[in-house]
Image (tube, rainbow, N blue to C red):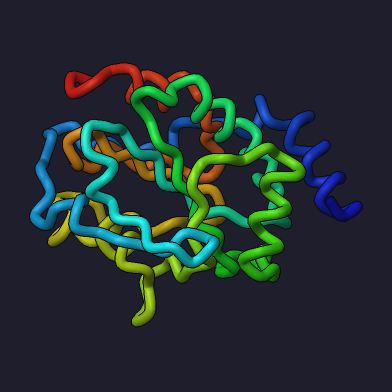
Length: 197
């Protein structure tokens, strides 16, 4: 971990309770079903292997765009805590991206090593991807941000560590902004609440 990363981690832990807010959440209150199945999506793991989303059936999925040099990078730690606590019902998936402040300059192998060594990350990390609306936006983020695919949501990631929660039936439940801690009680309520959340 670089000195800059250590400073950012310290700042996040000191200010974490102050900056965590679930007010940036948008929920699928009407339980609108997707037009295109979430389970048709695929991605490449950070090691290059294909990851098919059909293996996520009957699990909730929290998709997060990540970066190694961001104030929110310390959320890797709480994302791992969340994954460990709810491992029977939840899969956290990280999508490293360099689109916000150029805060993910590293290559895929360096990202993987950084996450494992500094935060003990063992949840799936995908290859570095384009997550904002663009011609080469990753297909998973196309689905997450296009209402004609997911049924209702058009919110793009606003910064690093935005979170999208998909339920165990492939319905997009909600969007949570960067400042929402992975352990925020509002997010936890959506994870624990099942289809009636």
